[in-house]
Image (cartoon, rainbow over all chains, first blue to last red; front, side, top):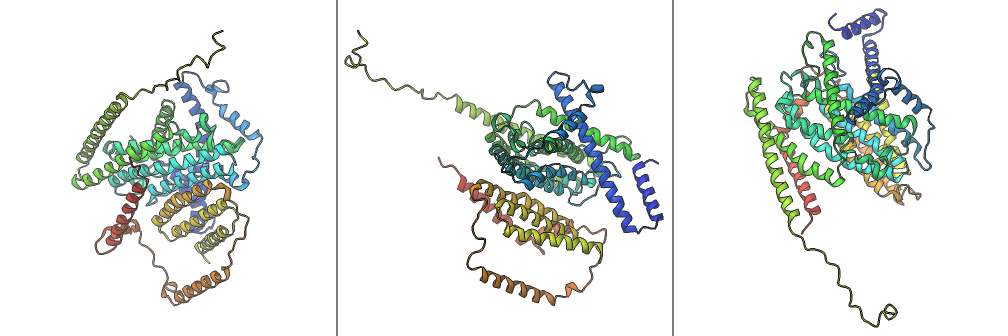
Length: 407
Length: 169
């Protein structure tokens, strides 16, 4: 009885086989039940994420947040959902109806699809795909498509500009994200997320802090949250790609974004924070679920902390930061990790982790030195005296031109 | 007919149907979106063959990069997104003949291939096709030369792109 989920699954399996169903059909039924249960739990969780997000932002902004409906405002999300459902569903004139309606579904479905490879506890995981890490990247590519479809089908210039910005941002930040994803793959010698978690005796954030930071930053950009929310900058393009969506279609985008933030927290904790690992998680896999969600929510909180603290960056800063800073840094980290992996003893994990950590600290120090000298030369350039613009001298006033003024 | 065959036929029909829609759709963006469906169908076929790496690479490269770039380019030229003119040019008859001959030739060549008749051997559960693929790409008696040539080509293309975009002062 130390693992109730597997116990229930086995009981169901024996029950169905006892009814005389074939082995293949039973596996299919159990898989479908598993998918439906996981997706339903996630979408129910999503309802409460609205409340969590509003409460946390309220704390950051020194106010109470929702506190009227139910204890601590817990019924507020249901009121919001009823409001979204009974709102008028408007489709703009000239919109491409089919594409317009598919886009929000893709936006939410891709996020739920990411959970298919995440190991929630030692025994509960969708599938240990041997290319799990690349699967995450592939699903991210499809979610970009959903946003482009929304922006184009809305027949709105702001929506189109928002979609353009999204493509520029998502396609560029995918590069450092994929490179930094390769670092835990090298450490674990596997691309399957379950294998990566199983191999983390020491959390990989100790062996690869730089890669973890790059992964977090590029994922926030992929998510399109502040400080990377130029895709929906209110002051410039109103709301970006979802400007024309009303009611529950907008709700799907919103729910997708919130669930995506939590999912990124979950992926980050699986890759760098040991996933379900924690005291008692191996003996009792059900405790692993608690540790998994604790870490995922902690990272979700970090993402919110960043969102409500930093101002939005400009589009040129966004591209420069990616191509001139994150990508080279990620490449250097990947090369250093790969070389050290060959040099350090892989059997002796403490030494191995310590060596990786020291190498990462050296990378950070060198990066800071380069940034400092770059900032100094930039200050010199800005501080140089510039030629002062002088207004053109007005033509000398002749006495004939103003005869009337003298009188 | 096994369940796998039914799934394969459904996926193949979807892929081909989407491919036909790509060339017949009036709206360019719709054509590009049908292309995405078609490419995704190919990825599913790879997944059915247990080639998980190829399936994921298909989605990342063809949908994530190429299709999105095409849609991006089409959206920048919105005015010609839906062309009302004829969808075929005067040489369509020749194209049909050439394509038909090519297809017949392929069928004729492959008809004698013994691979269709031999049943698939079960992959052992210990085998990791991904690891084998990785080893083959860097092993000197496999594909290291084509792999390196492709890398050099891509590097040259990247440097060329930077040189074209370089702002000369």
